[in-house]
Amino acid sequence: MKKSFRLILAATLVAAGVPAMAQFQKPEDAVKYRQASFTVMAAHFGRLGAMATGKAPFDAKVAQDNAAIVEVMSKLPWAGFTPDTQNLKTRVKAEAWAEKAKFDQGGEKMVAEVAKLNAAAKTGNLDNLKAAFGETAKTCKACHDAYRE
Ligand code: ASC
View (spheres, helix red, strand yellow):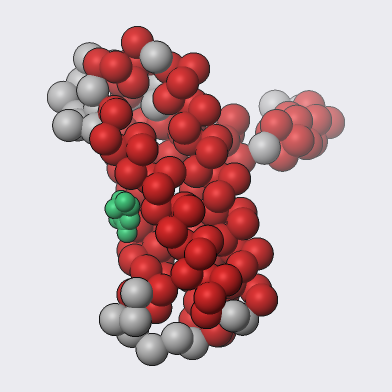
C-alpha cells in the first residue's frame, strides 16, 4: 500500500468509530466478541451492583473506575450481532432477529442509561449511584427477558 493511501485508510477507520472497526473473520468470532464484551461489562457492573445494594462498602473512586469501564464496554457488543451469526447456536432468541430494530433500540436504551450511570458515579454520591444502577439494570433485564434464552 502506498503511504498516502495507508494514511487515508487509517484516518477513515478512526473517523468511522470503534463499532464499525469491529470486523470479523468468521461469524464465530463475532459471537465471541459480543459475549466477551458482555462478560467484561457484567464483571464491572456487578461491582457497582455490590455497592448499590450494600454488599460491598461504597468507595466513590472504585465506583467511578468501574462505571467508566462499563460505559466503554456498553458500546461494543452490538457490532457482534451480525446477520451471519443468526443461525449459530447461542442464547439469542429468534425474536431478536425478527425484531432487530426493536432489539437495537433496547441496546441503545441500555447504552444511554449506562452513560447516566457513569455521570452518577462521578458525583460521588451513593444515592445517585443506587438510582442510576437500578434504571440501568432494568434495561439489561428487559432485553434478557425478551431476547435471551
Ligand atoms: C447484572 C448482570 C446482568 C444484569 C441484570 C439486571 O449485574 O450481569 O445481566 O445485572 O441481571 O437485571
